[in-house]
Length: 238
Image 1 (cartoon, rainbow, N blue to C red):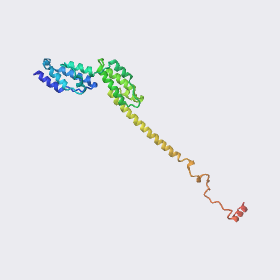
Image 2: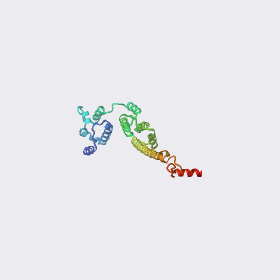
Image 3: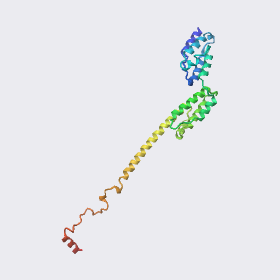
Image 4: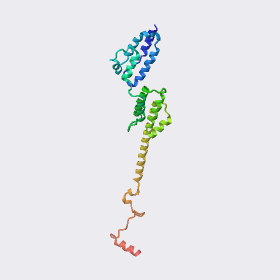
């Protein structure tokens, strides 16, 4: 009766696994926790539990155990999955890769953050440090150090406690930076247009017919050649 209750609970909670190496450690922990919930007197039903575990596997996970014999317990299945799908690198190798990773040219903060996240997930798998936040702090520091200077300053001010928060903050800072550059470019264009209009009003640009004309330029000069008598009269007056 106790086993029947335990088996129903395990059936409802047993996770599925498709063989993705990035989720292997999570899957193993989940099954370990479920196995710990089984009543001690339920050992007689261990074969049923093993069959249930196998039925929830698919893809690369089922391929990993397909040709294995004598998988009659969860520890046996766990060992094979770790051997076939586990991370081949050790903790030191992954940490070295994390400290050497560099941001590619024109790579945005989110894309670079995904690469950092993959290494952090691997460290969670192979790392032996009891405090997992140790790895996260290392990943955050490496991530921020590779950002553009003005972006990194904004992220450090926010003091993100997780890599995800650091990535979100960096994206927000990038958006602010793009908006600022667009506004600066728009203001610069407006100033250039205003300067061009002012240049168009320089005196050299006025029509030539107005140059060199005095205040009396509108008066009509007497035509002496057509009227010689008027010329003589002017001479007498002078």
